Image (cartoon, rainbow, N blue to C red; front, side, top):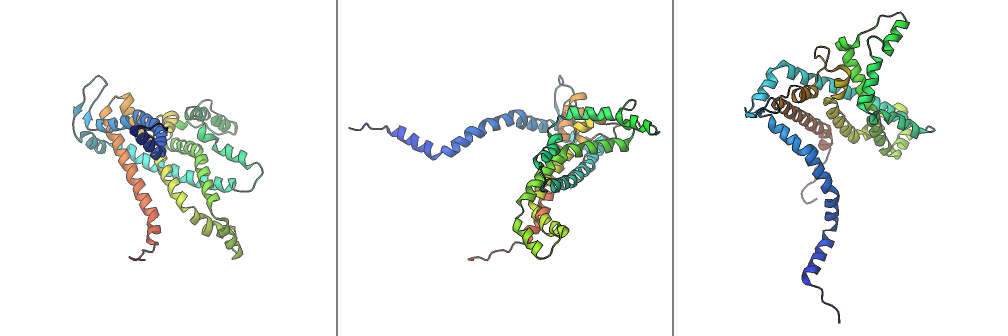
Length: 314
């Protein structure tokens, strides 16, 4: 005689079998989501809330002032000047990185011996420590005994105090940022290049297209989806540059390379103006989100306009 299975146990077993995939996903993603909430989610939300309070000093008491910090942001030239520097320096870094990364991806995609080694070399800067590599830059740029100034002396040129020149300071920040990010951009471009259908190249070659024509009419249109992704992510990362400014110029000379993220760091951890730091963070988040949405809508507008709407009943 078979032993009867309790109804509750059978129902639970059916439920577990039915929801197995969801339970596995929850078990995998649950700890990751919890960690993100503790490390990033709740602190970010708390920082945004601080923007509506005046809180100077950790031992002080927060005072609700509404939009006072946001009004100060647009009244104080230090803040909107830092925002403007973040925008144009971020756009410059992003543009140069994308072009350099695309050129590097074209080289990586060539049928060369040992191309895996070349790809690894291009990506090394992306995984190196920013603190260590910026210190190497500082050794190169040392005004008294730097490598570059020693070279200038050897050819009869006067040494340059790079840290006192706004133009040179911006140049080295942009150069370091491009050197740091070109490897990651190149790998994404390379993935896009390898996803283009080879039959399109064969058809273009049969029609008599040369290398430039295939690049213009086959490669670039085929990279449009990946280009949208890489432009958005590169622009978001470039606008939030901080470590380069912190370790190469320290915001100098005279605050002329101070970007918004560096200003937020100064407010929060140097001046302990927590309310102003929270307000600046929220303003920057809104600007980055708005720019991302606008670019995405513009980049996909042509695809939507070329879509033929289906008639009802078709």
